[in-house]
Amino acid sequence: MNRICWWLVAKLSRGLTPDERDAVRGDFAELRLTGGQALREMLGLVARREAEAWRGRRAWIVLAGAVIPLAMLLGVVSNRIADTGAVYGWLYVNNWSPAILDTPGARRDFFQFVQKFALQCAALIGASWIGGIVARLARAARHRDQRRAVPGRPADRPRVRALDGARRRASSPALSLKAACRLNEAGLPRRCGT
Amino acid sequence: MLGEFEYVVVAAAVRLGDDAYGAAIRQEIEDTTKRRCSTGSLYTALDRLESKGLIKTWMGGATAERGGRAKRMIRVTPHGIRAAAAFYDAVIHVSRGVVWTTPHTKVRS
Image 1: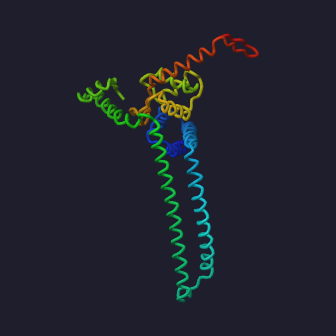
Image 2 (image 1 turned 30 degrees about the vertical axis):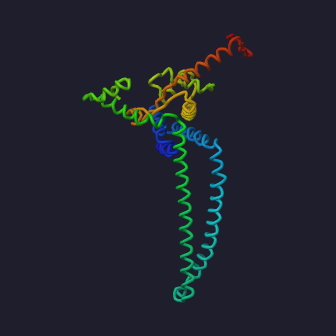
Image 3 (image 1 turned 180 degrees about the horizontal axis):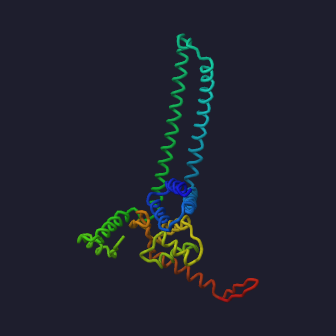
C-alpha cells in the first residue's frame, strides 16, 4: 500500500515544475512522511496549483475556444468512423467467402474499404497524438510562466548551484583554494559534512 | 497588507534565518502555532509572497537526509520585513482595548 502511495506521489508530482518537484519530495523525505500522508499532501498541492491555473482568463478561453470544439469534432468523427467500420466489418466477417477475393469487383470494394478504414484510423491516431503534443506544450508554457512569475529565480539558480559546488569542494578534505575564495567572495559560510 | 498565514510564514522564515526552507518552515509553524500546516498551503503562500517581492527563493543544496533532493531556500526581503512589521503593528493597534468575552470567561488584552 505504501509503495502504491509513493508511486502515485511520483506520478502526481509530474504536474509540478522540476525544481518544485525536487523541493517537495525532498521535504517529504526529510519529514519522514508515510506514503498515505505524502499522497494527501501532494494531492493538496497539485489541486491548489491546478486551481491557480484556472484563475486566469486564458485557461477558460483556451478551453472554450479550442479544447471543447476540437474534442467534440474528434468525438463526432471517431463515432462516424466506428459506425461505418462496424457495419462493413460485420458484413465482411459474417459473409466472408473466398469469392470476395476472386471476384474483381468485390475484391476492389474490399480493399477500398480496408484502405479507407486504415487511413481514417491513422488520421484519428494522428489527431489524438497532436492533441497530446499541444497539451504537453501548454503544460511546458505554464511551467515557464510560473518560473517567470517568480522574480529572480532563473537568474539565481546557476550562481547558487555553482556556490553549492564550491561549498562541497571547500568542505572536502582536499580543500580547493579556488573554491574557498569563491565562498569568501560570496560572503557565504563554509558548510561542512553535507 | 499580508494575510494571517502569510505573516506566519514570513515570521517563521525570519526566525530560521539562513536555514529557512520548505520543510524547516513547516516544522517551525507546526511547533509554534500547534496547528497543522500542509505542503500545499505553504508552497502556495511562498509563491504568492515571492510574486509580491516579500521573499526571495532559490534552489539550495541537496542532502542525503532528503534523498539527494534540493531544498527551496527562502530569504525575507527588506520589503517583506516592513510588510510583516506593518501587519504586526496593525494587529497590536486594532487589539488595544478590546475585551474578549465568551459565556464563561472574560479576558482583557
